[in-house]
Image (tube, rainbow, N blue to C red; front, top):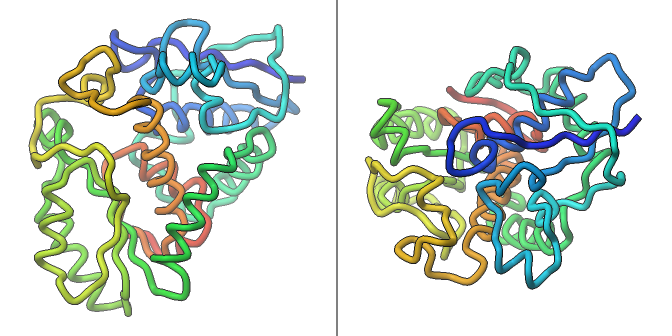
Length: 278
């Protein structure tokens, strides 16, 4: 039986759902909650309003209305049987998805890719980045979630990740560090601290120039706000960049996680991570 899961309001009044990674985690949670059924999923990020990555210009130009389909092909057609995403995340609590390669995560990943296929243009970009930066190297992936999380939720700052990285590098033969972050400050600090190690990251993407920032993602990702939106397909690109960070983190040999759905999703969709650091 095919169920269409409809995204509704969760974390903010400005957009439906959560951040991009949070919305992916809701899909993983829906799969998790259907462990003992034969339900197949179709995803609707449009009917109840605009998701955080909805991009009016991109939708007009591509004729793709459902913003989930900017990034994935859905292998099943939309169903007349609908259900809202579960708010209660008992099996996948936020920022606590740490059971690397658990049977549950393996099941979720298998079902996720049974229902959805990554768009070829995104897969091609990931493959190019991997071949240039990861291939035949010992890679430490680090997600550094700062800005509004530091400002509002008192999560660890850059120095926490620096100290953790030093310990990991001293115990593993790390050749490359891949950084997924929302702050340019973090990249600059890692380059300065680890000048003898290759530091790689997605270039030419939107990041805050601060470590601690009161502006939240739903304000930075807003196609109607010309102060933060100065590139074509701004919202679409933000989603693609987060998705690429998630999938690249999943391909690293070692992973230092952050307090974030990006880390949770990378761990669930793990491709190569051998050891997780918290």
